[in-house]
Image 1 (cartoon, rainbow, N blue to C red):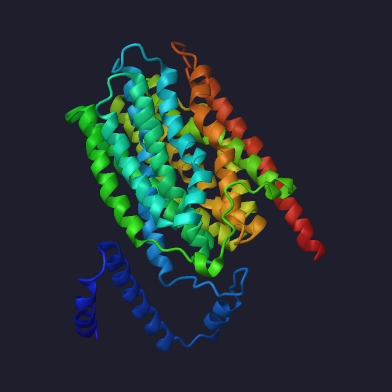
Image 2: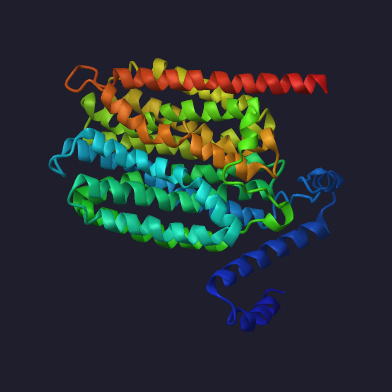
Length: 458
């Protein structure tokens, strides 16, 4: 059978583009697996599960099939977009400790990292519009070019504002154009395993963060800052291009609204509870993600140990996010992220605040790494819970817009709160992070309470 398929597909593959060839081969593989499962399945419960999983148009969601290829593609996207971005803490600690750009102050470098997230979220309405008009892949390929170009341009930066525009804004735009269209795709392929699929793909940012935290510090020390940026650009281009080539949406079946800015959703209280949780929790997320390496240096740890700290944080992310997805599917998709948001805030006071050596710092990095990015794992399934599958792109677009300000300014606020030269430089940023997570959790618990009340009435 394999030889027959290869013989039949070979002449066709010469007539189609490389992108279509890649997708075709993956589709043949998945369909063969599905055919085998259909021929050998004997459990009637599996058939019943498929029949009862529907979208808004009563079309069954596959809960697998080519969706698993999309999971792999989204994993790669997270790995080589957010994974790279999350390693900016290594660059930040280098910029803060060495006078790489004369005349620059810590706030300049804080805005570089903040603009990665802020610019990515700010372009959400434009990306949503372009995806509706030209299809999912077109803006994503544009993002691949912007992401790689940003790192290449940053390698030639000689002033802080060059770095801000290139490593900050341009890289952020590239990330946004790649990531934003991809986040809604998994919910089109999965129902019962939706949170698990999102958790697996979100783990990509942790794997990428671990990898790039290690190699970035090594490249800066052994090669140069400029070449570390260029090598990162090459890797990001190749891997994200491959991922975009593999991804496929189901918009023709789902027919999502895809409104860049749906004001009707803003009249709903449950939507506002979700958006406020996103806004406040992101204040803590960015502060923790970017401050940890320099915090390690401030308590007397070596540069290698500071790099290890952010590596362990990303390792915690890689392990924790699939678990968050599984817990959300098994328990409640609103209650689980509310509890984990609260837990992250408490851990800032119980573990991070008293940490004054390498051991407690690593413990906090591992523990918080598993849960600090609960927003990124659960925002897609949460939006489906609140508005349904057809309104998912519209609510996601609002979610991206609402976190623009905290992603831009969180690290700048943290560096303003930092007491440079004192015995505990990061005391106030630590308190700020913990309070942000605890307050944010209250809004999600309220959303859970309202939904429980609605279920009890029905």
